[in-house]
Amino acid sequence: MKFPSLVLLLFVFLTCQKRETQSFDLVILNASLVEVEEGLIIEGQFVGINQDTIAQIGDMAELKQISDGTKTLDAKGNFVMPGLWDMHVHFRGGEQLAQENKDLLQMFLQFGVTTVRDAGGDLNTQVLDWKNKIIEGKMQGPQIFTSGPKLDGQGPAWPGSLNVMDSISAVKALDSLEILGVDYVKTYDGDLSSSAFYSIISEAQTRGLKVTGHMPLSADFEKAIALGLDGTEHLYYVLKSCAPIADSLSELGMGYNVFGPLLDAYDPAMAQKVFEKMASNNVTVTPTFYISKTLSELLSTDHSQDSLLENIGPGIIATYQGRIERAKKSQSQGNNRYTKMNAVSKQMLKPMYEAGVPILAGSDAGPFNSYVYPGASLHGELALMVQKGLSPQQALSTSIINGPTFFGLEDIYCSIKQGRKADLIVLLKNPLEQIENTTSIQWVVKNGVVN
Ligand SMILES: [Zn+2]
Image 1 (cartoon, rainbow, N blue to C red):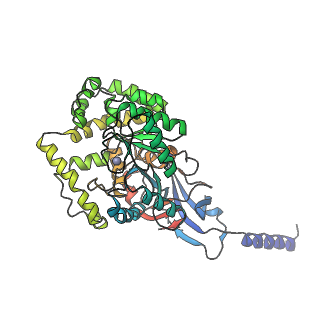
Image 2: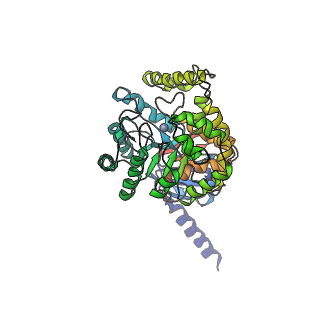
Image 3: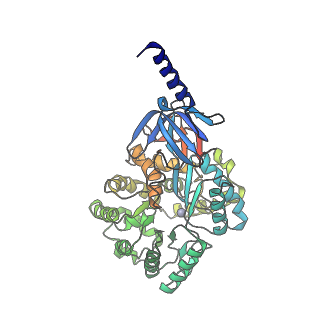
């Protein structure tokens, strides 16, 4: 090739290169991507976002000229991870606390929690309104999935619950939930009979609605699983199936006091069989370790100087008193259920994970649950999972992978790939190295918008 034609070719090549610009609404530069499922960090990447979706990712060297006006965030090598999911929170306390509940939404986002699963309360129309406004971009907050009101028996434990006594009222309650447009069904054991509980599961199953929650102590976990139960909240009900004395104790009507003897009788071999059954039926468990620990230390901890109290409204702070009074009563009766639970749960968590049980990260943050602060408590939950034997990668998967998977959304979230939802957090430190690094939040991106 003659010299002038080579120059011409080079000129054409360079002009073409220059003309090739990429158009994004937002680009995160120099990112170290945290791929939770594989437990990998991929360095030197860019993440191009259009609207609420990841449009392209790639090596920084492959990033062509970005069109003018594109918003950029230079991560400078910091860690970009999918947003966190808190799978057990509450909005409640009646109309008078609606605004204070609404004010909690921003706290979740500040702590990188981009999705919450509301586990039932008495502010259903408000929660559904916030949920829709957040989807439409008219309000800032995490994506919300809600169960609407809890399903309980004739004398429910929480206000706003729907009463289910038999199969007829189960049909009626599920009709109301469907009209409301809830995302799943939450049961509660204030006064729920086991037969009503089974009716709820069967009826929900025919409508394709998922059921999780508390269960009556007299109910049989394996029977509930066979009927189609999708999950169980807190560890108590799994625990009950892991103690050989459970059946004789459940007749005693001791309520939650029954768990002291059950914890003493925990049988790891029996537990292994229960875990295998849960895993093969894809039954989730949300252990809520953080609230358990916080409540067990309620009387020995001074929370008056907690900086996050500033973000909680006075009406919600007033609801914290109930648990404090209960803790005092419980202490005077020598009840150390929470302390025992903390010890036994350490034995349970790793075998449960290794058996393949889908464990969900949930904090139980919300009114009445004293000092379990929205957002912050989910980080506490993840840290406790690591203290109880999971690796940071495994703990993260209970939130980032298992959260979306519960709602069948694993192809839309879970990972930083083209086509996935742009709910991301930028962390200063590597969360796979140390779980506490999830708190080193630099930026939170929700629906493609930097908060
Ligand atoms: Zn709860």
